[in-house]
Image (cartoon, rainbow, N blue to C red; front, side, top):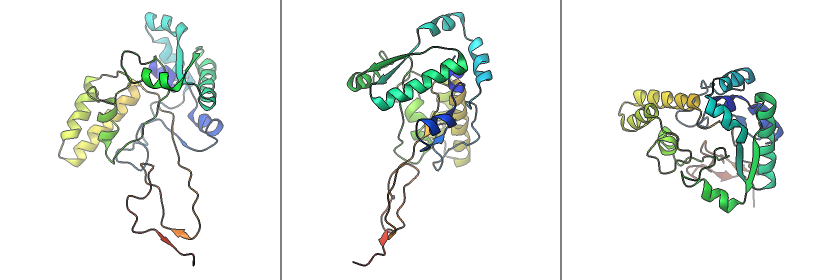
Length: 230
């Protein structure tokens, strides 16, 4: 059933209609420019026919549970617009009605911090801390991860990611992480949406200033300079 929901919304339309073109549609987790970014991971691409076929394979219990689905979110005007967009996509492309469940931001944060209270469906983002696949896979989706929010547990994923964490051979390590990333997309505990962007207003006389793939300013400041005379 998770695969059905992941394949049933148009990411290109989301970026254009909701984010006003500020972003890049995503079918994998790691942001381009970071180690392990996998442009070939397209399993979750928008495909309404495949989504409906996946839904038809759901167990009787899962089919019954669909009737009570709701998506929980921190109640703001912007998030409400986002959730209404997804609600419409799932209704149109999958034939499933998902109720909106707005809560205040404090409650939402509390709900998503404990495995016992995690909502069945909710929206959350991830900002990595360093340039390595570990900070996307083991740190977020490994069964021993302290930051895990969704209760995803896969022995195959654990074997690949925790094995890669200790693998001294760089090529083998990269291959293991890539396998883990693709497994993650196929298991679909999360439906990838888009890669965010950062707005930057830069004076023409400020040179060599840039944003890193992690979304930060320069890793070092030695090359930034100003050409304008004072």
